[in-house]
Image 1 (cartoon, helix red, strand yellow):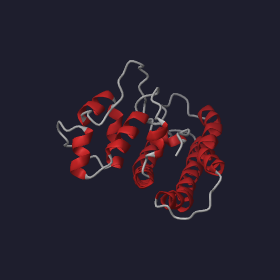
Image 2 (image 1 turned 45 degrees about the vertical axis):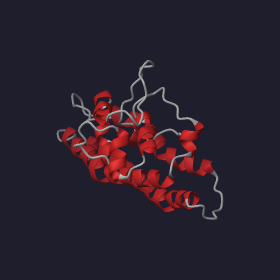
Image 3 (image 1 turned 90 degrees about the horizontal axis):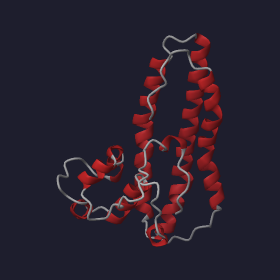
Image 4 (image 1 turned 90 degrees about the vertical axis):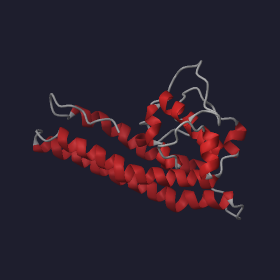
Length: 212
């Protein structure tokens, strides 16, 4: 598992860029993690961490709920600190089953919560726009939704079973990782190319939609 560029929709969690900050460990309290990066509150449910943990640290919470403390430490650090670089052992020791479950939960989160949230704000933003502008914005957004859903289906059909077989030491045909990377970044590139035209056509004196 390599640390690759995050897809366009996944870039919604701000990272800290403080070189003197100590990284999270299994002894870090979950409440302290949220104090450092409150936006992780939307990540916790995808890691099976529910609010109400009180003074528990990662180790204590994970032992009680049978979770992987190393995986949770890794994910919290990756999503919080720009300067954090997982070691080789950190990467190879990731249990693919944990990662797959996290990614599946993330897919569900984006499809059921974030994309509808963005859609709601888009419709509010263009309510007073001309029909032509409204059509452009909605067409772009609908096409982007299709790309995201297509990408998720590809991962769930092709990549996750492959990862599962590797984790469980099944005999699998090695696949070219560049195919995965190419497919994973396609959606982000399409959004980046379309964004200038979208904002060029944006209604005058209107507010941009809330960041996802």
